[in-house]
Image 1: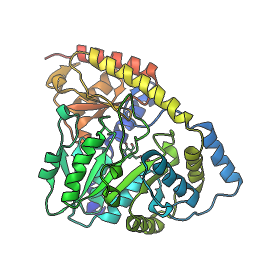
Image 2 (image 1 turned 180 degrees about the vertical axis):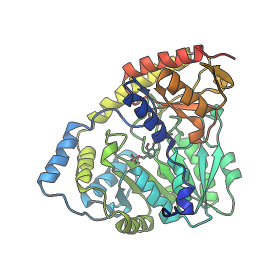
Image 3 (image 1 turned 90 degrees about the vertical axis):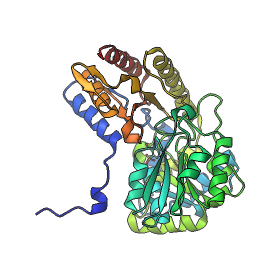
Length: 400
Ligand SMILES: Cc1ncc(COP(=O)(O)O)c(C=O)c1O
């Protein structure tokens, strides 16, 4: 008899984005050209000076364990960056560097949650939040938001979701999967409820550097004078510096939380890769034009995606203020037949689109919002052009 799997792990949903990406890869392996809009990672290579810093780190012998919470130089650089960009004062000891922001989130929930605690997560949400909360025995409380409000949680919705067991509000802004972002004023109004009801905020700011046009980003920790004391900021190198594979994320938090997470990490994984840490240090301290260059390219693609969605009859999406996703409303496309297959939900729609047109997207249901599909535009304009022509053809082929 094979060993049995724990109830907690059995209850985990595998990542739907990675599952769609795997299906796209399978199709590619059969020799087909696949237009892959499923995975949320920059298609650019990591900037050269960052790669060189990793080589230099190896040559200089930085190939051993580091302090569990990260090398002091990197933690100081992260703290300085938050001071320079947001005016927030953090000591290096309040920064914990982990194996990607996903690991940072795992540390946060493990350090803060007791079984039965409720963590409020507005939907649509990034696929891993609820699962990471469940791993701790805490309960994710999903609060649906409205497209008419750009999928942003309102203070009234927040108030209604709070119970005596609520401990944490999770906010992701700019959002994966919708690309929408809270204004400083909107965050301030949520912060008033947080203060009134004594909650902690986990603010996922991983898309902070990818903001378009005149939209203004605010870190949750800045929106009310005392918010820094009850906010855990999550950020990382993956999205801004095209460093997904290096696995470097970090938190900025009150000292007691940082100490708890450092202790946890020292037992679970020791430290994140020493070489990656030196690469991330070069990313933060080095020239930032690479970020602007990638942002400019993302902005071109966003414009193209916006235009195509506006042009294609029956599709719409909210304004993307940041990140690299469009969350398209496909409600009018459901209940129809595509190439002889009736499609009633977002999973069936995404699978039919992949099978019939080789275009990979992710079903809205994976993000807690049925009737939508997520398109990642972290891929070339050429691929986007061809892919959108196929999406248009797919819709035209459908029958009532
Ligand atoms: C909202 C959000 N948070 C966190 C992460 C995790 O990023 P990392 O690659 O640093 O683990 C992602 C990655 O897709 C994300 O979209």
